[in-house]
Amino acid sequence: MPSAPRPIVIIGAGGIVQDAHLPAYRKAGFPVAGLFDTNQERATALAAQWDVPRVFASIEEAAAQDAIFDIAAPPVVHCTILNALPHGASVLLQKPMGLTLADASAIRAVCRERELIAAVNFQLRYSPMMLAVADAIARGDLGELVEIEVHLNLVTPWHLFPHLNDNPRVEMVSHSIHYLDTIRALVGDPRSVFARSYGHPSSPLTDTRTSAILDYGPTLRVTLSINHHHDFGRQFQDAAFRIEGTHGAAMVKLGLLLDYPTGETDELWIARKGDPWVQQPLQGRWFPDAFIGPMANLQRFSAGEDARLSTHVEDAWRTMALVEACYQSNAQPGTPLPGLEETDT
Image (cartoon, rainbow, N blue to C red; front, side):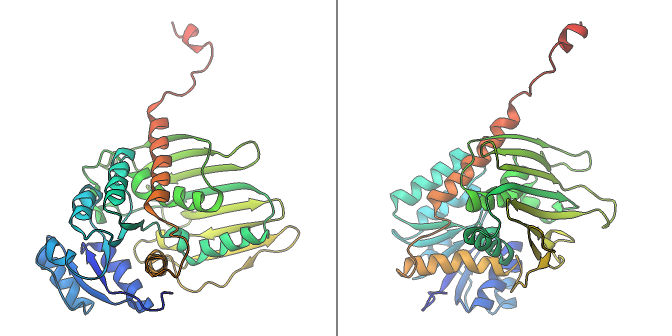
């Protein structure tokens, strides 16, 4: 944790700020100096709920503060907000880093030009269970990794995210990006990807289901199978990471996603080969605890207390490149079955 946390100015007062940012910062003891949102009524109500001392009347007034800036606004306005901040400011951007790689490149360019100390709030990698998995991998407890699978089969209340309704890209860039970034944090960048996204008759959103394979060479198999429309009761709903190595395996239950936003308990189970599964004790949950990590890292890096800013915009850009590769793959045709075109004529 930072030895002397600087005050935080939050730009944006939506659901993620109410459900995660403010609870996390209160739990960590990070001072929040004020809020700004174009919806002043919403910002005022949220400030009153969380004892935030000030609601700023404009982005210029918010940007004039000596603070760490937490941008929790839609990605389409990130560049505009970044250009309003002081040169060299420290800033945490809510994910995603735009909707396309071109958007991410524009955001990165502004950060470079204005010499901003900027990170993106990819927080799943900071969740208690994923930090423990990363530690187990680093210690060699699992051996050589051979399997990483993300499997979701559940109901997501998309109506809680109305800002997604008009987006040409939804699932991979707004949801599965959590898993893609966490996989990158664990095993680095893949060589290539194969991906398909799908809509659903019950949803107006462009894409709400995803299948993807990330190519890490001949021995490490990495897959995502994501279905947000399993509306047939809790019995077979699932939200999990499965990580297997030559010496051991880990299973992560993403409890938050089951009955979101209330959620169930997050869980981590680890087994060494030949031994039974053992549930690992966890301190905290994905929401809100994981949101402490990126802000703590940014505060410490800005103060010279951390040598590395793990979700720096330069690294976040690489996650966006992976997302872009998934969408490019989605736009490509699959391999046709040989000979069928002849029999169909």
